[in-house]
Image (cartoon, rainbow, N blue to C red; front, side, top):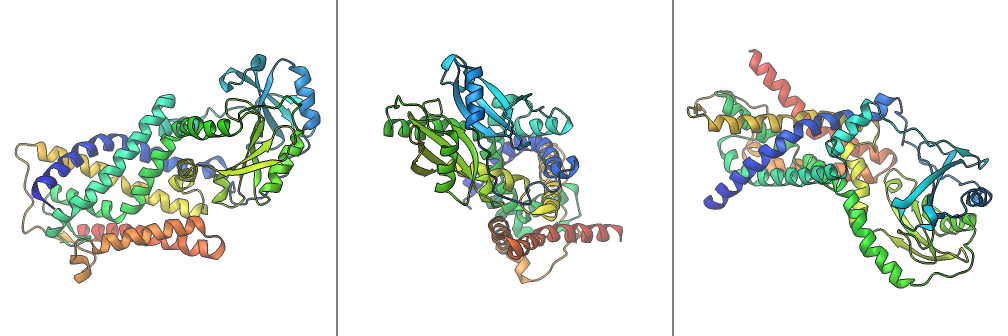
Amino acid sequence: MNGRFFKFLYKIHIYVGIFVAVHLFILILTGTILILKDEIEGNAGHGEEHHAEVVPAMDAHLEKILLKYPGDRPQSFNVEEADHDVAQLRMGNNGSKLFRESHRVYFNVHTGEEVAAPKKSDGVMDFILRLHREFLLGSNGKLYVGLIGVLYAFTLISGFFIYGNFARKTNFGEVRRGSTRATMGDLHRFVGMTAFAWSLMIGVTGSFLGFSSTLIKVFQYSELQKLNIQYPTAPQAPLASLDKVIASAQKALPESTFDFMVFPDTQFSPPGHFMVLMHGNTPMTERLVELVIIDGVTGELTEVRELPWYLKVAMLSEPLHFGNYGGLFLKILWVILSVASLVMPVSGIYIWWNRRRKKAPAPSAKATSVQPWKGVLFKKIYTVPVILSVFSTAAVIGSFLAQGALNTVFVAALVVPVSIVVYFLISWLKKGSQ
């Protein structure tokens, strides 16, 4: 790498890394707890099975609610995820099309009787979630966390290229013990390169989750405008049966399940057409939705549309970020990698602080070292890190896409980078006790 460019990249890496490191302490610690959220709350079996669900007949219930609120406009309908016996109907006050000018009506899907709104979680786990997701700063906090994710990805990528200039002094996995600065530097590079692909995925998915609300607004002002141009006028006839609309959407995507419905001519739907969101029934496709456009008068299918790529990535980011798609074993691997990742901000801050000291001790040329692996392969600068990155990426993607026995194989493959870190730490502790 060119000397001038290396110095420039290294300096940016340091200062951006210090800024990110301060936040990583909170994000890694809270994220580690959230990985095991279902187990802590006693919902360990949640999300392991995926079955299509049939929505009961809704027409009579809707008619009853509209009679009770005659001046309000129905805007959206969905069945509550936490309680499938309760449905939610959003009503625009005084005929408003805007969702912010609305109220929600909750009712039993079987009897149609209005019920109280489900209680929102306000316990310790909810606090940890908000701290991790937005630093307790609301919607602006989500954008801030998204920015941290982008900067974290930058520090990882820049660190990958910077690594080559420092790795000439040591073999891969070798950690010198002559000075604290040398030890911290070697640890920083070893953990960073071993978990590079996984850490980069966490940073990218975290940024998409942080920007998700903004991406929805982008969709609203781009894709929905196209629909409004395509369907410019709203028919005056009475709206189609709610049950028929859901049945038409289910017929269009028989392998999917009803998720959410927006009534015609609202803030989030084109004139004269229902917009129905349907999600899949597999561990991966349950996170994705497709848009089914239904004629508002006839209740017949108009077209099926896929979400734009950026919303698909945002939806898939949540399971990849928290590792909650492959059972408890995968979550344990995520926890180990998360805890190991704490080495990077700790060592990075120490290296920066140590270099600023006027009389910082230089690494000794005769320093002893811990080197669990020997051989020509580990003397090559990028060979092992690249192999680990390709292997980890293939294992993550494979475990996410595959099902059954093949899924188990890919999840088991993720043990490799974890075992390398654990084996190294054991070797290091044994060497230190001698």
